[in-house]
Amino acid sequence: MAVLPLEGLSAIVTGAGRGLGRAEALELARLGAAVVVNDFGQPGRDGTGRASKGPAEEVAAEIRAAGGRATAHTGDVADHQQTRDLVQLAIDTYGKLDILVNNAGILRDRMIFSMSEAEWDSVIHVHLKGHFNTTHFAAAHWRERSKAAGGPVYGRIVNTSSEAFLAGSAGQPNYAAAKGGIVGLTTSTALALAKYGVTANAICPRARTRMTEDVFQGFQEPGEGELDPLAPEHVSPLVGYLASPAAGQVNGQLLVVHGGMVAIVERPRVAAKFDTAKEAFSYEELDELISPYYAGRPEGETFAAAEVLGLRHG
Image 1 (cartoon, rainbow, N blue to C red):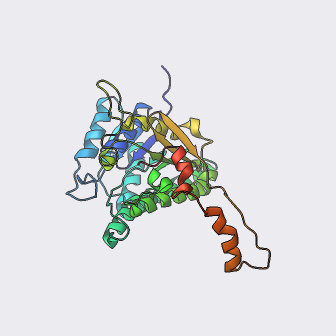
Image 2: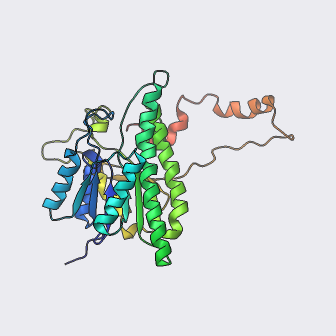
Image 3: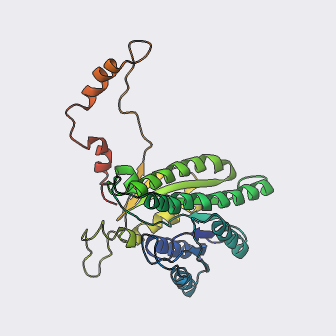
């Protein structure tokens, strides 16, 4: 019998009670990993409602029923202490932590001129601080293990960004900012942990879930018996790959994934460069050089690269 690629490894998946997180947890388990299924269990996609153990426990039970190993954790990843407990649960239950998949998030959409401070703070808190909290404790665990082993150990981080960061999203300034911050956190983490044997990558998934039900309503509805092109199951195999030994050379990368497509996104490149003819630029010289560069361009042309990849939704 062939050895599964994640056999003997343990994983945490946050926000794994529904949607993308659930599909990712099931995929990691199918590939052989023991999974800690984390979900705070609030019914509202805006992070409201009474927290429930149900979603996390149901997915963990589903994994066990299929012959895998799983345990549920129902803490809030935005809470530093509860996240410490989450990482410790994985270590105590399975002996170590090898894989961290950060997926938990909420939405509180509003135009920038209408958004309240609470709406801004809550989304940044869950998405960006939540990613930091889990990464902080997982990184400390891997660093300690590496020091004890006298060399690199196995560690994989897969973070969840969004096309809202890549292409802009007018009604989601908090969400887009959080997702952009997650990319910065990912690349910084990738550089910091590479010497310990740990990789960190981010994905921009497009999937029909509770979080995106408004965005994708009516988009490419599947025919009878057909897999939805926007099903979370199109995203989870990439997460399984990035979590595996096969992806050991993939580090600090951003990948867009949906409907049978994976795109590797390059870091920003310089589109134009201007040098002053004097010691320092003057207003007049900048106007003479830069204004013609943008003159006559259609509105939004700066997002041309995103349009090519079809990234204006999600």
